[in-house]
Length: 320
Image 1 (cartoon, helix red, strand yellow):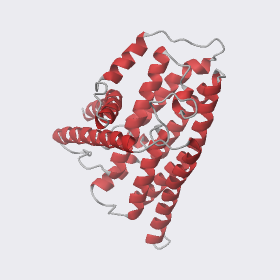
Image 2 (cartoon, one colour):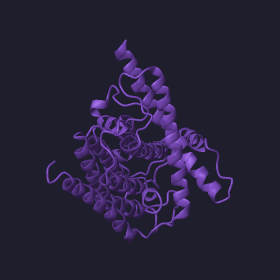
Image 3 (cartoon, rainbow, N blue to C red):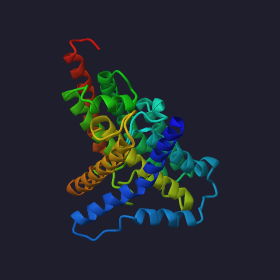
């Protein structure tokens, strides 16, 4: 019976992140529109867009290979698995043993690998431009992400997200400047990885500025729907990871009564709402930077991660 309940809770988490992803995207768009004193699209508009795309026929170029057709499904699958492994409303779930931060980074890297290959597969200039810029961003974002993971794992003596979230929730890790630096670095990486302002503008189609949109210009129909839902899942993943690593308050833990899981679900929805609102307000209040300044932006995240690790090393007196 306990195994069945654990499987149901794990299935609920997988369904929750998938169902919440378009709603979070709609919330960010709504907040941005309201801050600009516009009415904006409805909150449920991303669901309608996905339904419309799924009903449409997928138009594929004549010179496209099998990779171009398979990439959207591979990207969606890898991102969904990674998002489902991150603790949301409860920790210590059935698959929590596999919720390793390094494994999640590897899954995201695999999704990016297929996306960049698909962008270059047809041979258009826009696809090659977007893929080259994506690889440039990834070459700086992934080391910064790993440095944040390294810092947090050294404090918690584990790379499993459930273990880290439990230690933070029980205040066993304490307040540390190194963790604050890691939080700022992770936020900078999340903005870059999700193609958000100031690194990229998800609402633009200008040839000289777009990164993510340049790689998916040749997609349509159900293929484009898979990529869009994958992008929304990636945003949910990073917000969930920030909440699990640094704000796990309210999260249910193994052995808690069923009411704790309900409280954890409400707390998680509140965190996602707060994250979406803050993201929308931030994107309206700042301008997009030039592409050539993105390395400086991500270099700051990498330096913060390195400083966090060095500060942790010094605070321990040279002992890990």
